[in-house]
Amino acid sequence: MDQEKDIQFASELRAVINKLVKKLRKESPTGQKFSLTERSTMSALYQHGALLPSELAAMEMITNQSMSQVLNHLSELGYIVRVPSETDKRKVNISLTEEGEKIFLQFKHERDEWLKKAIAQACTPEEHELLRQVISPLAKLVEFK
Image (cartoon, rainbow, N blue to C red; front, top):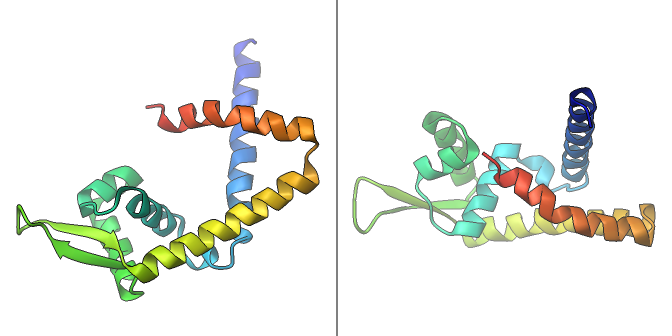
């Protein structure tokens, strides 16, 4: 491919992925109640357990101040808990509460169910298999720095 076609391909891929992300958000009534950063923060906490606010901010590529606002909102809703570090009392570990985990799993399930249904109804078996094959390359893109 020449450079112009590569740019066009990258642009089309980005546009489709963005639309899919927006569609998934729309198809989750529970997920619509949260910002992208709030959902992503809850996902990180679900995956990693307890994290420091600075670790969450780095993962989300936002400032510590912005992460503080996200965490304050999630705390007000009762979805996270702050626990002082056992090794350094100046640090606070953040983790999901039982209710936070429940709500995270609910909007994750809503999105997964919608996507499963969409794939089954909109894609041929061959396209379904092609989507399975593209998961690994897409995961590499997510991890690329």
